[in-house]
Image (cartoon, rainbow, N blue to C red; front, side, top):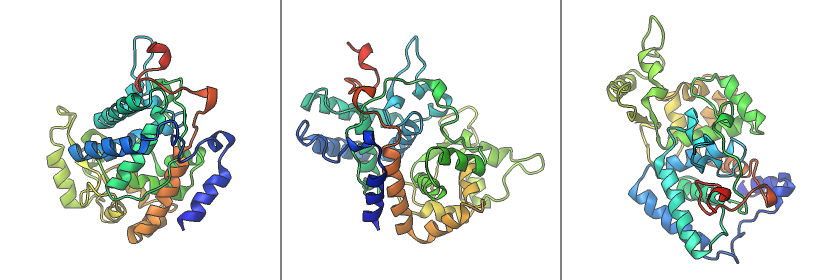
Amino acid sequence: MAFPLIFLIFLSISFSEASLSIDYYRKTCPDFDKIMREIVTSKQIANPTTAAGTLRAFFHDCVVDGCDASVLISSNSFNKAERDADLNLSLSGDAFDLIVRVKTALELACPGIVSCSDILAQATRDLVTMVGGPFYKVLLGRKDGLVSQASRVEGNIPRTNMSMNQIIKLFVSKGFTVQEMVALSGSHTIGFTHCKEFADRIFHYSKTKPTDPEIYPKFAEALKKTCANYTKDHSMSAFNDVITPGKFDNMYYQNLKRGLGLLTSDHALVKHPRTKPIVDLYALNQTAFFETFSYAMEKLSVYGIKTGQKGEVRRKCDAFNSLTT
């Protein structure tokens, strides 16, 4: 099944994507794969939440102006960058740290060769695979973007309180099918979410019902205890998948059917007529989920990429070259 999906991707790629290849650094940075693998592995072992954090950072990067590492840029006195937009403030520090570590090692081995956007794309794939998810091909040769503005984020990343119709419309506008959207939502099978993102479901659902009645009651009570102090302690959080939080599998979809979905947008997947049949399929068939997820990630990873003069290979991932000379 994987071969025809990959074949379709290559049939549909644009001219800019055609300059990418799996072995892009074979001659210019022959130790690229080895360095990536060693640092990614050691970071994930030391900090097991790195996989989920990096996957989320990659998604947030790609859906705003394409996969160009613009989310890695730090703000300065004259520019508020993407990572400081409201929707990105909860992105994982482990993800940013991982990219810095890999970039530092690669600059020593082959200075000025490997882009930060390629590092983020391949690190994401390696981490997904490490925690049990499917292997998928990553084309390399992206350039790093020349723009990173917080004002560009809103409207490109789904908010947790959006209706499913709004979320579907957002993904379709970027060229993704409903099935691909549901598969990408399966990223929530790993990682955690801060309490403030789902507090309304457990504390302020309605005037007559403080808690969403469709949350499994014991799960709701556990969340209330976990998040009791969330207004004062903003680090309070809960696992997206309470059953197998560190393993990339199809348990997320099984949980949705049991009332164990954390976010309003998660729960909406199992209620909406266009998404419920897909949730049902993935809950029963992990292979089907992995196949669509792999295809969607390959498609996402080349979304809006920069090549040639449209980008650069940054010397530091958190700053444009014009600011590091």
